[in-house]
Image: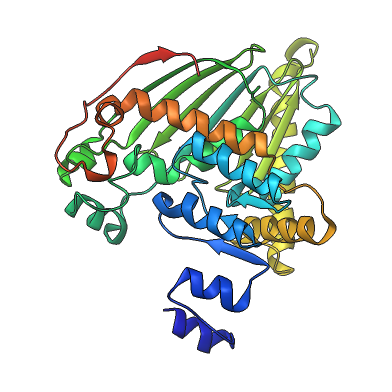
Length: 345
């Protein structure tokens, strides 16, 4: 595959050995897209060889690894970031503009992140279910571990570092059970409260189709970001006389949705509306940070907090995997259909 890419894009060299690549060409930046279990060791080696690092999600397997990697990047004065590309779609950029403009009326009071994932593609889920030694099955959070960082990162952006409570429940959908899901869970619900009082919920589902949303509620307003349709709508609380409450707000939402559609059409014509826009924007900002010695596009605080939240979720829904301390070799232990624990993170 490397040879095919080299020929297609006119790349001068390709390698099958990391050490050989680092010593031969000394790359400025290394993009790591291997399974998560290898992220930490490869990224650390690249940083120590003098390369900046772009890591696909999840950043690392644990928060301990995430902090260690970030500490290494700081010590070596190099840049590192994670591939949370959905944080940089046009609608997410517009959401941050609205937050900065004061639409919420203060710090967020409550957050809701909804992330759906379609298991209808047998080419992805088939090999996972057929092989207990598949790398996805060997992750502490199994299927969840490979996909939920997108949704949890959206919450981490607005939550304090100090998480007071986190409760996670998980179960297996009927559809996955019929596919022979074994111990793999695919429905997840999480409730979070930070020390500052902001609450959040996260819903991951393989049964809910096409819903990838972030909802932010503040003291005086709210914002809804829909990644599936590339749209943003917002509202500020205000009292209307008589029956105007039944007419004015719906008309305002209708006007905003019309503007969303118009903007998407314009971006499509200008070739700015494409699935990889968020990834392109994230990589551009990362490279700009390298060139200008600026801050990486995703704050280190958010990367570590995302990892900490995921660690606690997996500790609650797959407790026996943590207790065995042999995740990489485990092939037969079965997880419970559901788990519910409240814990401080």
